[in-house]
Each structure stands twice: as structure tokens, then as C-alpha cells.
Amino acid sequence: MAILRIPTQKEIKRYATLFNVLVKYGFEDVLSHSPILKIIPKSYLEKHPETKTNLSFSKYERIRMVLEELGPTYIKLGQIFSTREDMLPLELIVELEKLQDHVPKLKDFDVVTTIEEELGIEKFKYFATIELEPLAAALLAQVHLAQLVNGNEVILKIQRPNITEIIEADLMVMKQVADSLEKYSTQAKSLQPIRIIESFERSIKEELQFAKEIDNTKRFAQNFAGNEFIHVPEVYKELSTDKIICMEFIDGIKVSNVEALIAANINPKAVAKIGVDLYIEQILNFGFFHADPHPGNIFILPESGQICFLDFGMMGTILSNEK
Image 1 (tube, rainbow, N blue to C red):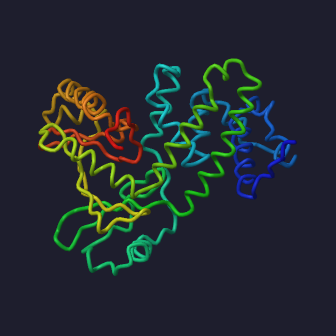
Image 2 (cartoon, rainbow, N blue to C red):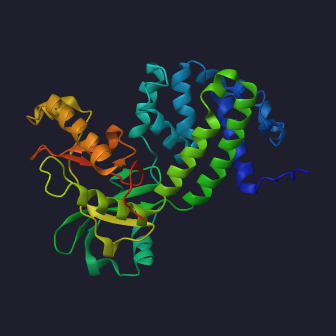
């Protein structure tokens, strides 16, 4: 006899949020066969004045807006699919690409206290300065610029508060929706949404393990030691934990910014060729490759023209000599 699993309060809250956002952007049809309806209060159906306005946007714009509003887990899924032109329409790819740079910043985040408590140090023992305003907001973390007492510029990648709990609740909802889509949509079933979410779950949980990301960065650097075409950021392991990564600040040009590359006297075609060669080398020579190579994670250093991969939280492995 099957045991009915009762959703947790956090899961119910995320179900309600998903339902509300989908209705807000005119995707009620997605919910028509979904078990979500059984646990959402009827009050959510009564008043959604923003829906009419949101329907003035294209379907693909609304998909992107839904992912943005649902938060980090959904934005990350959209980022992954932003490079899958083999699976999705070009119009949707264009919208998903916008998710690579637009991530909301944390409000009322005490960066200094967080660093001191997590590292167990006083700020000025190692850091000359720490910028309170974030340099960038990533999906799982927020990035702050700092300067070490020796003058080196670094960035502090600090994991978002309660992000693990948020992702766990989101994944449960995603699995329920994927299951419903496979049951009631032949078109959706052909895309195997359950397998996609399971694969996504493995990768995003790995990305939450900052200690593993540090090890991945070190391994990647060892693989390309002496290669003049690539630069791997230095990681300060003594100033890093499973929730904070302290690493070299990279001031580069986003690989997709062709105009900026040309202005810096860098040949985009040469960059493309070297980039492909480096990626093939990752796969064929090492069997260990960057698994999230969207343009926001690949920079070109203007002075040297070297390619610099960022964010080693998601790595793929084909071959392994480990026993």
C-alpha cells in the first residue's frame, strides 16, 4: 500500500508561489492537470489583476519572467537551457540568455559579519577592505570585491542564506510538475522532464558544495598548467569554507561581447577557435570539463587575450583514472 507523502510547510509555500506566478503570467493551462491544484487555496484563483498586463508580452518573454520571479533554482534551470539550441526555439533561447546576468541582489545582507563568523576571523586580520555593495549576484551566492592586506584584489563568493532549503523545496515541486507533464502531455513526455529534473538535481546539489568547487578549480588548474592560452583563477583555500570561496578577482570581457573584444584588439574568431580547442582538450585529454559554459562564465583577459573559465561548481566527467 502506497504511503501518501504530506508536503512540508516550505514545500506548500513554494507550491503556492509557483501557482501564483504561473497564473500571473497566463500559464493556467500548465496547471490544468496538475496535483498542485489540490493543495492551493481557492483564494489564489480569485484575484490576479496583473495577468492581463503580463499577457501583452510574448509567450517566451513570459517564460523568462516566470523563471526570474520564482528565484534561483528556476533561473539556474533556465541558464542551463539557454545553451540548448538543439532543444528549444531560438526565440526562447534569446530570452533565456537574459537570465545569465540578471540575478537579484540580497537585501539587508551583513557581509562582514557573515565572513567573520564563517571564517572564524576578524575582518582586518586578512582583508584591507571589503566592499559592502555586491559586485555581482550569482544564483547560489553573492559576490563581493575585497582586497587582502598584501594588496591582492579578490572576490568573496558567499552562499545565499537558506539557499539549500529553498532548493530542496523547489526540486520537490519541479518533480511533481515533471511527473504531471509526462502523464498528461505526449509532447512533454518526449522531452523526458523527469530525467531532466533528476540530472539538474544532481548538478545543483554539487554546486552547493563550495569545498568541492575549490577542489574542482585546483584540478582544472593542474590539467592546464603551462598552457599559455588559458588562465585559471587562484583560490585562497585558507580563506574559504563550504559556504565562502575567496579567489582572485578577474577583470575580463564576457566572451559574447564581440564589440568589446574588437575594441581591445582581440580577434573574436581566434578566441572562438582557441575556446573550442580548449574545450575539446578538457573532454578528450582529461575527461574533466566545465559543465556550465554559458557566456557569463567565460571571460577574456584584455591584456593577455587568455580565456578564463569561472565558476567550477558544475563539472562533467567522462573518463576517470581514480580508483
